[in-house]
Amino acid sequence: MGSAEIDGLARCLVIHSHVVTYGNEATENLTRMIREEIECMWNEPNARILIDDYDYQLIFKISAEYKPDIDPVEILSNTDPRCNYFRIEKFAMENISFVDGVGSNTGYFLIDNLYTGSTTAAHEYGHTLGLKHPHDLDLRGRGIPGIMYPRGTLVDAPYQYNPEARSGDSSNGGTMHPKNRKVLQGDIDLLRLDRLDQENNIVGDFTSIWHPDHSTLQA
Image (cartoon, rainbow, N blue to C red; front, top):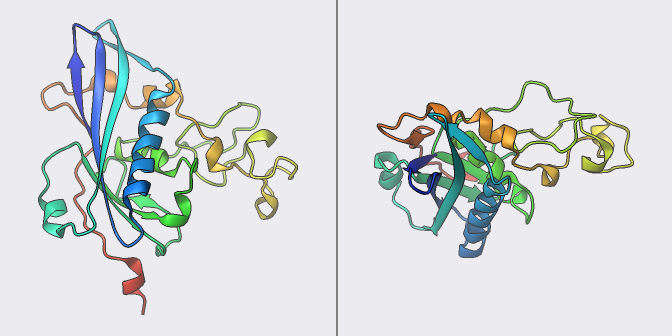
């Protein structure tokens, strides 16, 4: 989720987002890595958008904060559209990182998904802005996978976990390795920022859910 700022003179649209991490596996260094991944990947395409027949450069400005002792009330009562709250733990019920909806500002990250270059944070950030997984998960013959393709997507051999594996053989690495995802102009286009409500300039929506450590919920 983020707040959009239009600079008519500079002809740029800036999306401001602030990432707040908490949980037993959150750290200052990991929080910085998440911030850098999101900002770097979403700015990488040097995207342009058309608003009222004018061409604008799109810029993502991401800040981040590690708050190990965050009060759940802060998350539940937050009204700042820039703020995104993510718990980070060793265990997740579905064994995968997630956010609380398409267009959201809260979620739960599995530490194993957050290795350097994983693209997980950038992918989940796309969900917070309102992007879904694509319907067609067979990308063979179409090159680099966009950032919103999920694990299990069929891709050309160079983008698989194991380039030597038979395509689709998930037991041998024959599906997309998330590290090969990129933010593409097509991903930006799907945000439909040309339809941005300039009265509130919000991209995404509030979910405002504080998450407990899933390991404490096991029977």
